[in-house]
Length: 405
Image 1 (cartoon, rainbow, N blue to C red):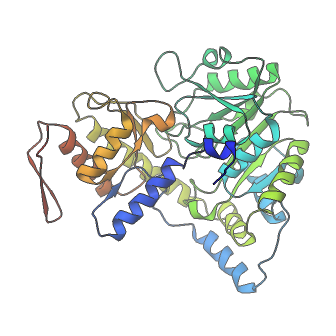
Image 2 (spheres, rainbow, N blue to C red):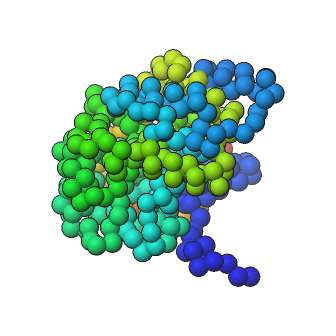
Image 3 (cartoon, rainbow, N blue to C red):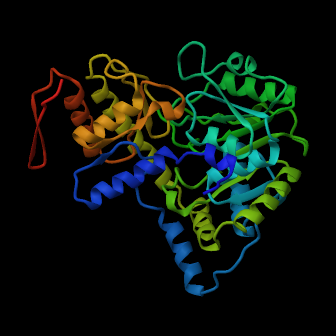
């Protein structure tokens, strides 16, 4: 069989593969605990369900404009004004099949083959493969000080003649780090000065903790004209727990949005009208579900951090937001893929290897499930890794005996 050179370079999404593995294990009846997922367990907002049901009951589920229905674009415009203080027009907005598609189409719009896009490390697993799909090159920029918090110098020193764009994801998946106001100010100024596209992946911007306030990139933009190279991406998946609805959006200058819409029109013809209606319901409806989710996540984070701190030698930075904790387990095993597989094999706990995010020796652990999953999952991990733990462990009625060293 002959496949393209681009296709040969693309590997399966590790996070989606883990979701599939968890489903298979559960189908078999195995007591698996999934600490690798990025999917809130709270209910979808009622306003979203009512809006979708109302649209479905009409029986008129048809094609829509490739850039989104007017009602959703209007909701996104209102959202942008409320949370970013920025007034935009419908031509500045494109709805998409999730924030992931918005980022992908933005990269397809601005990158030529062999050009580079830079992103801080650790980074979301899809960024490198998205660059490859454009025949471009993804360039990771790990902070020189060894933290999860980049400085402008970390980006500057990787910019070359082929650099075309920068992606900033804050709060960050997988680390949960919310980048400093100074860094956001610096990166906006730097990209304007160097004439680089800046893609702000803001999908977690309302899920932040410890009384922090979202940092608004528009506060530091000098060029708000139609020549601006700023692209702000967001969606309903995380803040409204609507992962399966696959609705996101991009806000950018009109020419960029026009071109992105042309690409999307040939890819998918645009998002489903039914799901767009649901997104309108969520954005325009009662917002208490977002705060309820945020509070739940903050509590879950505190529980996970307490449990992780009981490990001897595990290093963990308290997340500022999202629903992920990125912990250094290299004291037990430097090969994160090997360690992740070991935990699945021995105690049926799913985690995501840090190497997928550009940092070996780490595991990404999700705290968006229930407290029971967090506590029992980490207890199982500790039993499997810490030889000072008791020799036996019960998972339900099943007794496990550690017969390895």
